[in-house]
Amino acid sequence: MAPMKRFLARTFPSLYHQMAFVKHRLLLPGVEGPQLFATIFRKNFWRGPDSRSGRGSGFVQTEKIRETLPALVKELGVRSLLDLPCGDFYWMSNVALELDTYIGADIVEELIMTNTQAFGDDKRTFIVRDVTKDTLPNVDLILCRDCFVHLSFEDIQQAISRINNSGARYLLTTTFVDRATNRNIRTGQWRPLNLEKPPFSFGTPLRLINEGCTEKDKDGTYADKSLGLWRLPL
Image (cartoon, rainbow, N blue to C red; front, side, top):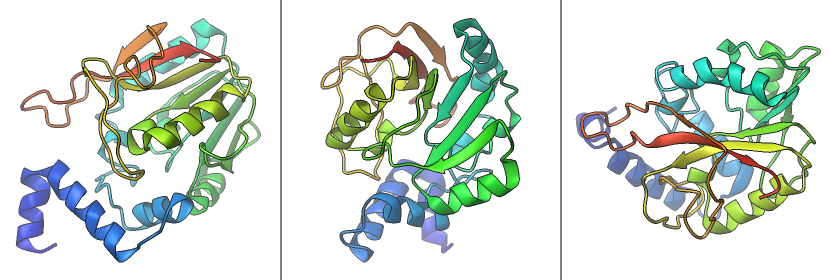
């Protein structure tokens, strides 16, 4: 990486990634859906030092989730879980969940093939799914971490429709609880979302797991990042 790129990446990470996204869209006009996210994966666009799914999928940023999720799954009586998107299964591979069925789903076929070879077994399967377009498996709990934050409002509404129609009992998904408003983006970009605010208005979550996010920890920019639990359908 050239000196200027290194400086921007380290000093202004959000700006750097937004600039990189714009450049990516200019180089690949019209690329959407699986092709877009496959390119992000192959180029390690999110610059995660441990996981190609990004910095938020490393062990540091998932520590509180890994500590809390097994107890929540047990308390809710969850026996089947859909992890969508599962990414490269980096942090989840270190979570001991008492499940009969774990299904990891992602839009990137390459990821699913790799995960199946490395982690698949009789209780753990991986499938290709686009949450905005495809029918989803019927499970007790859908974990949808760091997904909606990358989708446009239109794509989020499509995803919510698919989730509601899946027959799942619960949704556990990313929400930033201190944000007063939500802004729209083009799918593939990123911004924080508060799912209790319009245009979503999910209502008060049954549970909140504050992730203890330390990204940009100097000013606590993302200290409100949480996983919210809602009963389905929304």
